[in-house]
Amino acid sequence: MGHKIFQMAFADIYPHYVNKAERKGRTKEEVDEIIYWLTGYTEPHLKEVLDQRVTMETFFAEAPSLNESRRQITGVICGVRVENIEDPLMQEIRYMDKLIDELAKGKKMEKILRTA
Image (tube, rainbow, N blue to C red):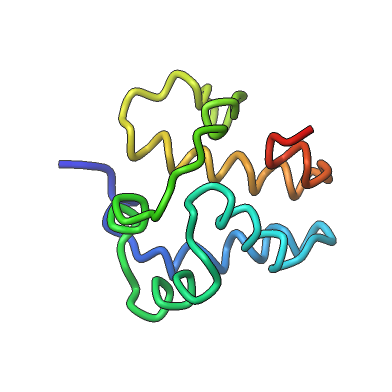
């Protein structure tokens, strides 16, 4: 049995990402850009995922194109190094958490999206 978060609706987690960013002066559009970059979803795809309340597991399993550059995401989130997480789904979730964290900490988008 996987972690509880695997069966949570992405639609329940998404507002937390947006709130975290907005509290730090960032935007929903920047959160969406991170999601598009990481997963390959587009705006209509993302709206559909939110409307259909797909689980986190399905969100990542059906991601159109997980960005190869996501492997460059390193560091600690929730006390664990993301590059050392063994469960593939949990690692994908923590990659997203880490990117949203970087956004909230004021990093430039090109650094967050590993294009610098």
